[in-house]
Length: 114
Image 1 (cartoon, rainbow, N blue to C red):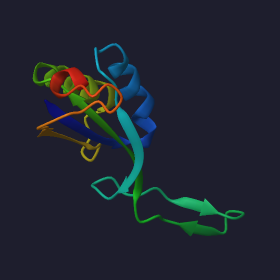
Image 2: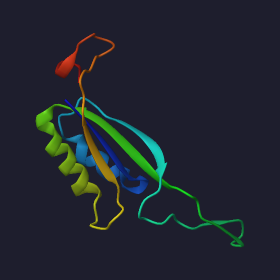
Image 3: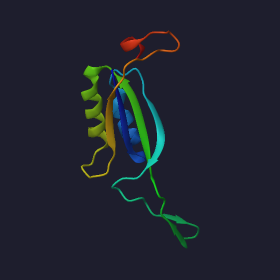
């Protein structure tokens, strides 16, 4: 089993979800995250156009999915194809090993738990 974590810009979240919807996944988890990378943070205008604020971090979404080994390529490819415009700083995807998975409700373990 592998865990895929994709950190993408918040504005591309719906495209990523749509690309993953048709894959046979057991499910996914996502959460809003903040970070710094190659893309500069946006300028935010506060008040009546008088003050300008530049946040320290960009708003991102981190998607976390645990899949069987043969599914990794399809999941990664779908995320890249749906979120990339070819520019640097559009996010990262990390793939790591998962030693064990346990379904809390059924008690199933291993591949059948995902």
